[in-house]
Length: 114
Length: 115
Image (tube, rainbow over all chains, first blue to last red; front, side, top):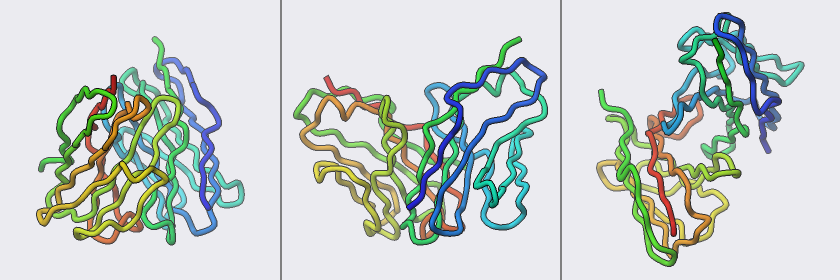
């Protein structure tokens, strides 16, 4: 079985300040972990993915995430928020034996204010 | 290079009717996935097709069905529509063999409204 828990349903930051979106996972297998972003009325865009290589994963648009097995966490960070980062962010887990089923978290809505 | 394309963008149907949604994967991709994003229920896995075969199915009733064509495009059919079927239906694609080790790319979705 696998699951992800996104610890915050809503995060608000000021433009230019750091972003932290938190995700904990549970997986019976060695997991693959992803962060996707969804802008209003749009599909999902892959930000980054972890597949058991380097634990610090760099993605697009300045985002990165660190896989911490001891804490079963995969938090998403960005040093400086931009207005265009306002969107819904999904933490996603999968792994061998899951027959290609992605399990999504419930999402974190990021608000960026001036 | 074109991404995953879905049609129609919006569809309004009456309860009890059938809806058909279409998806064209990225060129070279042979795996296609369908997800439902309904208000309050989040993103839920519907179906996975790989090389023309249904490989996995989510926890949805049989009135949700689909198929994958020889050109790897896919169709999702929803029969006997119910009001709660109103949702954004997202299609995704990847290289062959499923998601493990592959990157999944999503389309922009088809909005289905059942009235």
